[in-house]
Length: 347
Image (cartoon, rainbow, N blue to C red):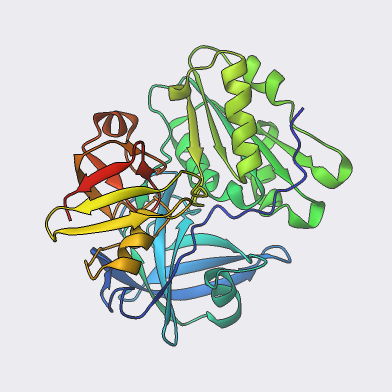
């Protein structure tokens, strides 16, 4: 049985930077931005709001597939926040996008800004959708496992599954009845295909039984707090499910835990010492004037992808594929570190 006592983590990435590094109107880092209008804000639970976004010109928004996310640029005086949010709306209805935002306590700034300062009618800049959590087209059955606000990417995936008649089951755990975001909608949409687990009632997922009963052609997908993700990965490994059949969405940067190492910036001729537990990006920003584009700072957007000239990376991002990580050609310097004592990067 998994311990589901802490389901309050966001499936969003919140980052904070000063105005000099957060991009300008019409761009988000190196990515082109879309201008949208906040058409509607709904209170879903005491901590979650749903935001409906429409194109400023009233036209269709860019297409996306289930599991995609966007990055929203928020400006609060001199502070800029770039938050990644999963798209919840149907990929077949491009007249609007919908995102769900849970208020963090404490907040890095982004979720509090969304809850307290963003109003209906406001304009926001967002990126076009990107999908790091797509349904596997080869899977014969999809086991969807959500914790807390981690339900959001599954909302759009469910639309895709229903459209193509895909086989699935949804398991959704949350802290208490009042925190079961979108529960009624999911019950109507999924019928017997969804099961709810309420922690305050002592209800727990039997991950060993759930994953142990998966057929060879089935794939598992998990989004939610780190303890749930770790539990799913551990249970899958214990019953012999290969990692390629377990898909993870986690918009929270892993804590830097490695030792100190040296990074040589080949183009600029700079050498930077990265302290234990520090990101390469932070060390470069602290000790050099070398400009680095970085949007999410959570290993999600790919903006800071950098070529590796010497050494090997300890990859911690969600952007590169397993094959790309194994090739050791590039790395995301906002979250990944060095396997050894020295890296040479194309910066």
